[in-house]
Image (cartoon, rainbow, N blue to C red):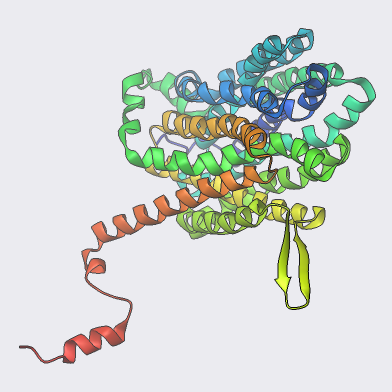
Length: 440
């Protein structure tokens, strides 16, 4: 790890809060299609599958470039790379307003997605300012910039109803450009880059940075993030459409209720980072996957009418989740996903302190790809099954698989470190009976 003895607390706090501000602005732009996509869908007459592809396309770009941006942040400094990412995202969002056909919107969405690559740059930049024992909390605060999704859901519908989607895109583009200028003017180069410049050391070669990717553990972390972050992005994009279709809400109301998911799924990431520092990331991941498995199972249950043949005639009853219980459940889901997002990234600087950019970039890429694949899958499942809750059925399958892999991987590691676990039992009465049993 690089020397942080010369870094003051004020410098750390300035780097952290400026990065969080920049990431919030980037995330607000990255999620813009969750709102303006609804009006574009009506304008172009898109089905749910084509709509899912449109809103997910920015996520594809933002995911795929995370690996390279994380490595470039290691090599050239997070301050310059993050500023460049924000300016490119702002320009792409402004140019989006000139699109008129579906292919043009898809192409524009690809470039808008550059804003989503800011996460791996920010993780590299922020982690370089803090020692290992404080990185969980610091990265949790930085990751709370996901609240940019809620900013878009709360404000963009109001502006879109008043002035149309083009005005939303232009205002968001200008806002991101202003945020880029503020970040660059008030931020400093990260300590690792400054230390290399003083010593004349060369950046770590690309091949060496990518070496940890041979470890299966990195890809297990990636599956965790596929659910906690990819699922978050997918639901942030999909919930307004879901609420309008399943509950008949207007776009402004749907945006406000969807924010009830996005806000806890963003702000409580700070709590997740703090808990990961205090209790350990593994404990937090068990909480996240356990509760998420239960909640997605409940949300996956479709609106169903039953007729039971009773003694004195048929008995009919109806099972469905109303709007209020649905809002409560997605709030709970968002809360625990936020804890998990922080816990996953607590692992990375601890296990791979010299490869945060590369490993964080790959984990972020896979998580982001979840945000690309899942909305398309949600739309396709809607078209194929005709069941609104099919999106939660898919999320249940993903989180159940992640929980199982995590648990068995942890048990395998425990047995490798403590071989006696494979021979002993948690049932002392059985051990006592075996000890007293006469030998033949």
